[in-house]
Image (cartoon, rainbow, N blue to C red; front, top):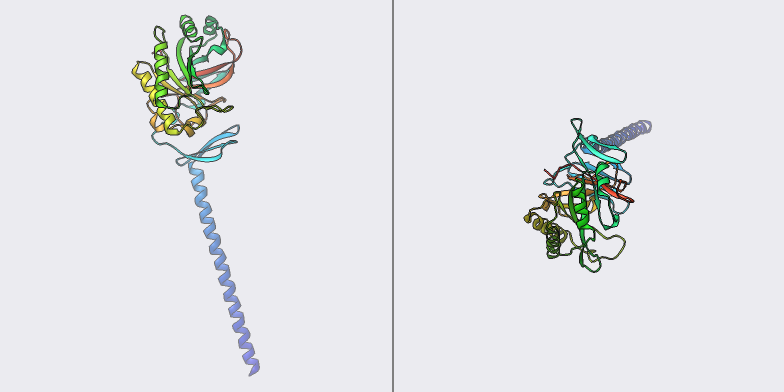
Length: 313
C-alpha cells in the first residue's frame, strides 16, 4: 500500500514539474515574440523613412517629418520639418566643380552664375580683371552696424566697388551687415541703404546680413527668434517697397535656431556654408561656398558664390 502511494506521489510530482516547465517555456517564447515584433516595427520605420547625408561633423537625417542635426556644439537635436517652407529644389548631382569654382548644369548647359562678395577689406579691386576671370556678379557691402556701439556706418568703398563692377560689365547687388535688435533699427538700416544707393546702378538683390558674434560680447546676444524675424521682415519689406529685390543671408545653424522660417517664405535666401556641397535642407537661391577663393584682380582671399537665379533679367 505504502509503495503504491509513493508511486502515485512520484507521478504527480513529475506531472507538476512537466507542467511548470511547459509554462515557463511558453512564457519566455511569448516575451521573445513581443521583443521581435517591436524591433521589426522600429526597423521598418527607419529603413523606409530615413535619408542621411554626412559632411564632416555635421549631418542632417530626415526621418518622417523631422531633421536630425548633429554637431560638436549642440549634440543631437531633432527638429520638425516645416511643411510650409520649401525644401531645396536643385539636384545635388548637377552641381559641378572645376578649379575651385562651382557651377550648376541643366541639359548640358551651365545655368548658374559665379560671384564674389567684397568690402573695404579687399582694398582696391581691378574689376576688369575680375570680369575677365569669369566672374558674373558682385555683392558689395554697403554698410554695417557696430555690434558694440550700435552705430550704423557706410563701407568706405561701397560706391567705388558698385560703380567699378558695373563699369566692367558685372551685375551688382549689396548687403548690409546688421546688428539690429529691434524692427525699428532694421528699418533704419534699410532706409540708409536706399538713400546710399541713389544714383547707383544695382540690379542684384539688397541683402539683410544679420550675424551672431561668436568671439566677443555683442548687443545682439540675447535677441529672440521673434524679434530677429521681425527685423528680417522689416528690412526686407522696406527694401521691397523701394523697388529692390530683398534677400536674407544666413548660415544653416542660425537660420534653423534663430529664425521663424515660416514667416520668411516671401524672400530669397543666400546660404553661407563652406562645403563641397550644401547640406541645408530648405531652399536657397544663392550659395556662398568658400571664404578662401582666389580671383585675379582681387588681392588675397575672397568669398565665392553661385547664384541659381539671374537677377539681372
